[in-house]
Image (tube, rainbow over all chains, first blue to last red):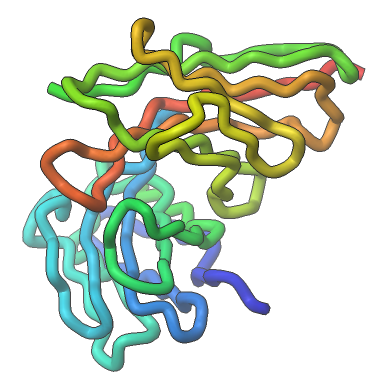
Length: 116
Length: 114
């Protein structure tokens, strides 16, 4: 079956622009995660959804970052007034059930964002 | 603070040679431990995980890892690497104050010499 997909795969934005990154999780997966991966680093947690509810947004670096999953499937990560430090790969992952660590997370290929 | 260290940024091995990627963690109790692989243009894929029990864990693609509590290590091994194993490998630890957040190492890039 289809895995997690993300679009666009690459995004170049001018500083100050708003961007929207899309994640299509595996169909039927309850949990959805967003991560930020800086160059040469491992992923860092941004936010977590269980169905349409955003249960944890503790990793969002500023109020310029906003995520939603209105119907419990597709999710969008929006970054307003982008800054150069936002340049990173944004990863989406989904898991079948709850967010317990025992549940395997399936990752998308990521969106590489470059802010000039 | 809890942390994960992958001491090697890059490792180069010849095709057919054995491989060991190092992972050390800092955590007070027995953590949940994971190895993921990230191939170019692909998402992170789970290779194997350790929660409890037998300290030698078998994973996909012929990989295995051994949990050594005394050394706070969870090293990844493969007896004979293939060119298709060239990728970046990440070790991750289950965060102690959260039952779902992972703490990730910085990754080790594996380069295969023909």
